[in-house]
Image 1 (spheres, helix red, strand yellow):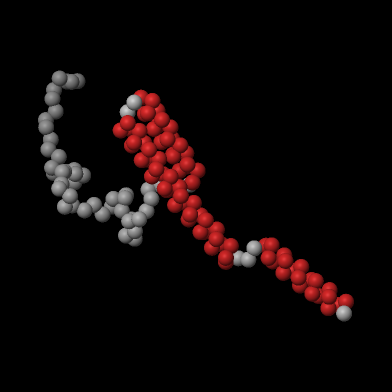
Image 2 (cartoon, rainbow, N blue to C red):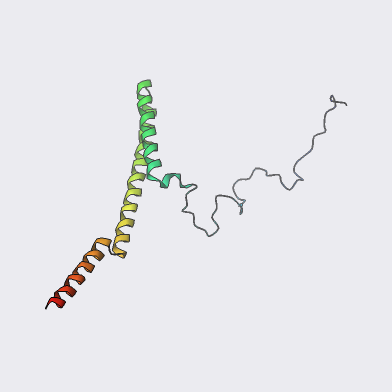
Length: 132
């Protein structure tokens, strides 16, 4: 074998799979970040919809801020505290959504306690009528 031989330079411009530089005028229709139905308000993953994950993230950034404070870097402290503040707002938003969802669910279905109370009242009324 002749390992010393150089391969000739091949231009890629004739290839179909070559993506050259563009100034943003080209639109890529099969991008994984574009939604099929045009809904641009979507999350990439559901990790920040779980309040426990958000709470752990808040604690992580607060701990990072404490570590940066001990190193004496005030800019990094402020950065981490801003991240923690963002996630605390996200947590309060998630908590308010779950609170309104539970309120709406209880409004739609009568609670089991009221159903039991109605049955007891009905039974008492029936027994009162029989006694008379």
